[in-house]
Length: 442
Image (cartoon, rainbow, N blue to C red; front, side, top):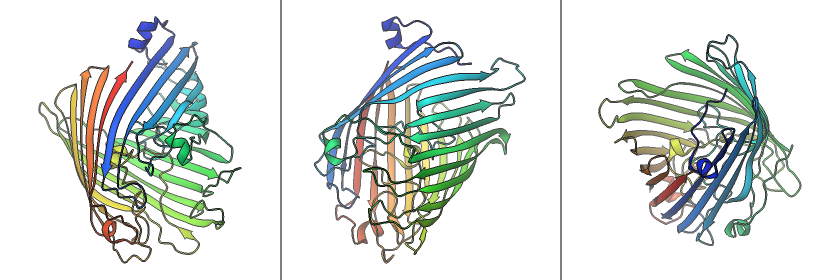
């Protein structure tokens, strides 16, 4: 059963009854980048973005009906800005669902309990590296279909789903610049389904395993890479705790077929063989700030351009900010053609303030493929595999607890090797990015 939640300021102001939940968040962000790493967009860019979310849910007993409206807009960007559907999605009903409670959720019950969600919805699955509801990003992944979650009395959890991923719009350059209102689509030509299981008390923590299937094909006026991918993976992790070691190890293998591009003339279905790995070990020290120090390692395969084969890992519908730094106008790193060890330090001065700094060294897994999401590529491999370094910092503070939070941060990409010498590498110096957020939660 759903635990009773304390009504927020908006619900109280509206006098909402106990069976009606109403909430909203508004986030304003100013950000800018200089020394662009991408080959074609403006060397320097800045924008102001505004994201508004309004969620309503009615509890009718064993069934809950809910909806969530997202409105994400961007202003003041350069005419050749790198903004995409990750930045703009106006007046979209991302969620419109019915949630049906199943089984017996009472304390001490011998059976299990579950939740079946039907309709438009967002999903966080496992580590969120392959399926996620986005937080830092302006827009989120949305899915239309059925999602069943079941938890046994012993704490084991199984999730199975079949969905049509929502295709965000506007998806043309002019529509994005104009913040045009164009409703998202779903189609059986793009299907995403699979299962995820989590077992507690395994290897000193939790063990997860999963299998996902993405099947897409070209639609009317919409070209795709015709990805028909299976992704099989596993994860073992223990959550951070004061005075204890923690870990997070995850790996996945991807296979099937896909095309190298979305070009109308590209009709070759290539055999896919790709992988990714994340390994993290941390320790949380005792003390007022409870600092946590963690060693990180991430790697994902790239594509060597071999005839009939494709090797670049596809991160599907995952989030990456928590592993690789800020996205938005930045977002240089991703789980694709990368090898990156690093260090991270996190600390919380009190319940209102926390800080994080991190460092990563960067290499290409395959010298012939584009590095991560930069688009910088030397097809001959002559520029080598070293790409440089990334340093990142973030500070968050609740100006008014649980109501108004400020966040600021940034990243510097110190370009070296391929990011300077590849044929299409921009001669723009190191990439410097910064942002400032204000988030109001009602």
